[in-house]
Length: 465
Image (tube, rainbow, N blue to C red; front, side):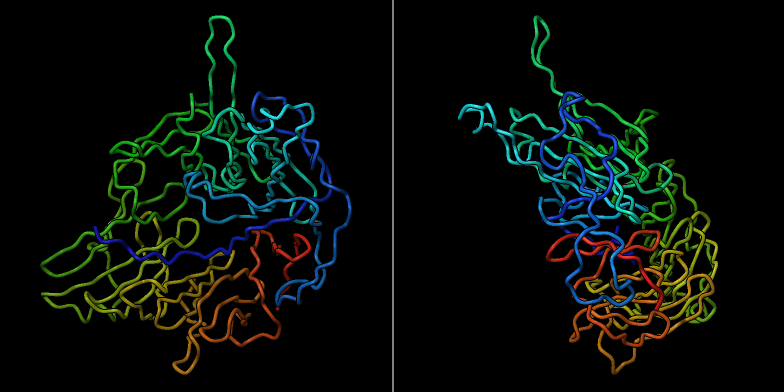
């Protein structure tokens, strides 16, 4: 099947180093051999108010940070739970209304001989902290030790151990990968087990599962399920117990709707020539709807002939809404619509768009309430109200190409210009706002922004422009 174009919401993740937490100590979650000693370095986040931000003021953020950290210890943000642990290529700081930081703790070599010191891996001990984004207070502390004897785990990065994903209801969650090792004793042989545990942004444990050896130690986790795709079928194993599921479809297509939602694939027709979008219930394999049975926008249907009908492309929006783009078969000009993900029912007809064949420059951002989107398909950005279908503005033919990066709901669109670098625009009018944007923040879902500075880690309250 031909791959469907995805208008994904872009989140700019930050890989942060040289940062340390602030405020509170939190509870501890042990790693290898549960109940291990707390690390001598960085066990408590300091109570200082934090350092002043030295960078230029960022449009859309308060002038003074809500809280910050200093740069005494090396830390970074979490990884992406939906990717296998060995395929991490970025870092995620925010999870719901919290911020997660992971510290690589230096090995304590006191009392060790030279051979024991040589056996120590550089990243065998991690401390993760879940901070309240508004105050910096630590809600939960994860103390994670990996067995140094196991060469398969030595040298892991922090974002391979603590990751951000979603729970079964689609809510944000933190995934912590730990390890249980027992030595041979008497007739009992040594054992290794991997433990995957998920937590809510509040720090509440959502579920935990233990697996023999390293069977799923590096596996991707989606919506609270471990993804086992080692065989022809994709098997989903729920963290915390429950019935495992086998997906009856090729897990490579677009998914829309909450949870596992509906998988949208493409069905090509030769008479008339058309590309129908077919939505299938992801967990049951039953067809939910097809654009072959849906009415396209009137302006498009008038162009249909006996030989040529439509092409359609689906992409997620928010909740159980999705974007369905309609176009005449073989053409690049299309019409955006908002639909119900489960039925395909049209909720709003939006503006027209022009796209390219490659899709390499495709970009889309969405406001937190899901009602405003800016889409760039390579032929000019368009901003629209996904609830009413109203077009808010369109990139002019004489203007630089606008690549949207973030739309946090404070009236600001952060974007890249072809020749103007990263800028802040008025989200309603695309007017260029004053101020310098050296780095696009990562935004939480409750009005805060995460910024990496040269002397620490900073959290700002967003402000309406």
